[in-house]
Length: 346
Image 1: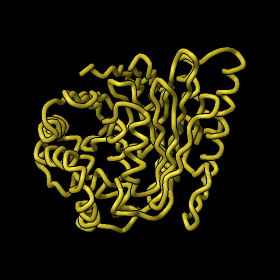
Image 2 (image 1 turned 120 degrees about the vertical axis):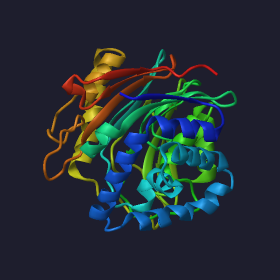
Image 3 (image 1 turned 90 degrees about the vertical axis):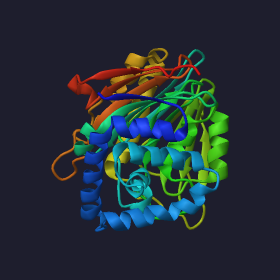
C-alpha cells in the first residue's frame, strides 16, 4: 500500500500528496469520469462546473483546504477543477451514488473503539492510499483515502477518529461543507466536541453519516442538505449503515433503505450484543465482526455480484485511547495487506 507522508503549509502538504500519488490520482479521475457518465449522464466538464459552485463558500473560512487542494492538483499535474470535483464527488452527483459501509463505535471503561468496513466500486481498490499529515499548529493525521481526496477515514494525534456511511438522498446545499471536507474538518479537530461544533456551524452539503469518536466516547451526525441530527452514544455504542436512523426535519426526503443496509445494521448490533454477554470488546473481536459474511454476498463483509458490484475495499479498527489503528485492505477475510496507523504527536 502506498503511504505518503506530508508536512508543511497546506499547499506544501497538498503538493506532496499529489506528487506522491500522481498515477493513482490520474487513474481515479479516469474512473470517476467514466462513473459519472454511466451513473448520472454527466460529463466531466459539467462535474467540474458543479463542483465550482462550492468555491464562494470555501473561500470564506476554508481557504486552507482550497490551498491544499491546489497543491494536490499542482503536484499531480492535473486541473484544480478536477481535484475539486473529486473531493466533492458525493455532492455533484446529488444522491445518485451509493457507497455501502457498516460502521460502529464502542466505548467501555478502558477503551474507545471506532471501526468500519468501507465498501465501494472494485476499480478504486488500486487507487487507495494511506495519507499521513504532520503540522505544528494542528493535530497530525493518519487516514485511508482515495488518492487526491484530502479527507476520509482515520484518526489524529489527539485521539479523534472518524468513519462515514453514504446515504442515498437527493439534495445539495452549496453553502455548506462538502462531505469529504467535513471528514477532514473532523480530523483537524482536537476533540470530539470541537469536531461536532465545527460541523454544526458549517453544516454539511448533502446526505452522509459521520461517526466521530475520541477517548471520551462517540457522536453520530446524520446530515442531509437541510439539517444535521446529532446523537451521542447510548450505553457507549453507536452503529450505522446506509440509511437514516433518526427523524429529520420536515421536508427532508426519507431514505428507502436497501435491504442489505437494514440487514447489516441488525447483524452488527446482534454481534455486539453477543460480545457484551461474554466480556469486553478488543481489536480481534471487532475485526471478527467486520469479517462477518451473514447474508452473503451483501453482508458486513461485502463481496457483491455482477448486478451489485460494491465490495469491501478496506476494513479499519481504531483504538482512540492509544491513538492507534489497524487497516486491512481488500475484503478482510482475504488475508490481504495490513497497515498500522499511529499519527505522530505534534
